[in-house]
Length: 217
Ligand SMILES: [Zn+2]
Image 1 (cartoon, rainbow, N blue to C red):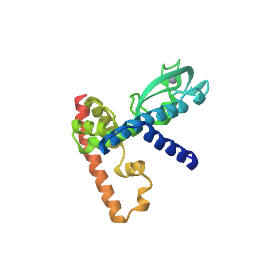
Image 2: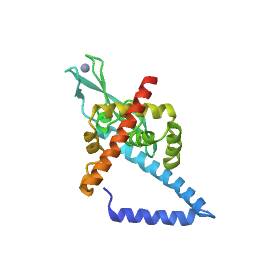
Image 3: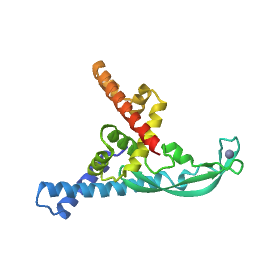
């Protein structure tokens, strides 16, 4: 995905930048400064890539097929703010409208696994994993500490409800392969059973939370 030479020159530039620009008196100050720079850098790169992924270049054509069997017509680009692991990014993607059934379609969102809400699949995975093992308030504090992302309790509840619904639709085995298809190759049979067991407990715990969250909505 990234050329080794390009990566090395970026790392060298980052090290030079840190030496020249960051003033710190302790390891803690250094950690905090690097965290701040790292997050700002990640946000900037994420926005650049997100803009490239959406936009006019991904125009799907004048029409897409609608669920009703007719064709939905292209109506231009629509903006959307997404909350990614690296902060909020703005994307533009093609919007289609069906005159027959008044259905709307944004094929780009479907391909990216986005719902009408703003969270990316990676954010939902992270929030759901934390909420499976911690109460919402603690999960949200920990999320802020490790990623800088701020997610309100009501949003975390919605994510858990969404993910919980998806989980209930599938068997635990199918989820294992969706989450990670490679780990089995590196695990012994006993480890595989342990991972499956752990995942099963996570799914069960998420299911309970999702049911509570849905009953409150
Ligand atoms: Zn239609």
